[in-house]
Image (cartoon, rainbow, N blue to C red; front, side):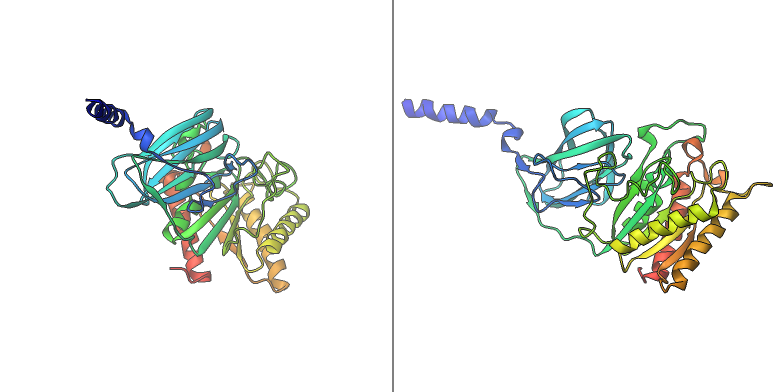
Length: 355
């Protein structure tokens, strides 16, 4: 009788066991997780990130997977399951657990989380994955190709999902995973790193160069180790805010640009560096900022090529057209980003022989 009661007890205990009791916790320090972007690992609880398009990738076996985040702000993250965009996660302040995928086929899968929103929207700390109902992490290899984009709101994807040029900025319509740089990297099977922030300039104030060496842009002490991740190509897409109201002083602006390219070159001695003009600049009947910018850039590129650095090259994105749609506050639409992506891919195919 006692044996029978004991059996009933164990049957009842296991029948009440939830899927959570059977979960496999994958810590943020698991060697199978691939981080691409700038992550600060100083906190042992998990890495923090802020820059657009920071990504977290895991290959695993299992049917159901969750992620644990600690959020400061209101960052939005895009979920990719086996390379396909699925759900968008609007993070809430504080520590929360978020379902990523459920009822997957019982085989191996890849989950990738991409930060859609820029640093000013929020800072995210990743605290790990949970495989609900059992499973295991699998090893994966980094991709061999790498692209870095340095820019402003255009490269962040500011308002690219908005339906009107009059629309205000909202985190919901900023999607770094549908920007020209991310798309080009995706389609060329390359890893992607973005250092961009809306409103930033090259010179003289509110600049990206002053933040460029930081892991977390608002933390001067968080310095990025450039030996961790070395790109094959770097796109500098900074000038839109510099030429917004008037042409900046040619001597000082080109000097600042040249110094910035030199700084990049010290970190990436073999990368091709594109100096680009963006799609939001155009000439008017009297004021011609696009023509002026292109002239400045030709001077900059000529300076490097005269010194023997032929890997500093121009990349001119076409001015956007209203017929292609305009995003929030006159920013590039999804269609314009797709066209910019094609332009960048063409340049990479020519200069790096990437197919």
